[in-house]
Image (cartoon, rainbow, N blue to C red; front, side):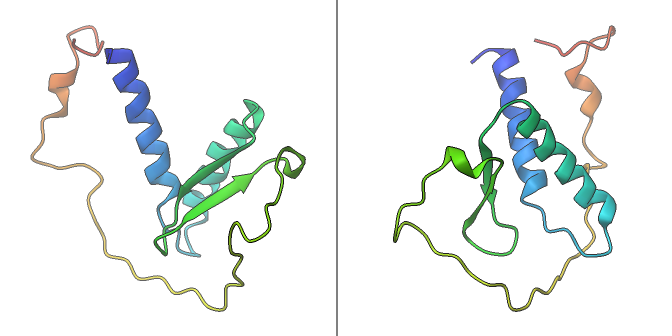
Length: 112
């Protein structure tokens, strides 16, 4: 895989992790970021996106245009959410002991 391919994969993994992160009700800024990301995909012409659930073992689907999909009877389940609770611990976004500068040369380009 090329460096460009690895960069793209890293971006996709980062987006998926962002979408699969639980957003507490008081964190409207983070929720806005996920809405912005999904809006980019919609404007790029995607039919929808699928990502891991932040509160269970399943997957979530966001469908931008339901006319592009056909419902298959008995193909899935729909649940009515009765209660959602959040429990979270603070964590560091970056490892303070990691040297991230080694990835870039003196021009700021990613090293190959």
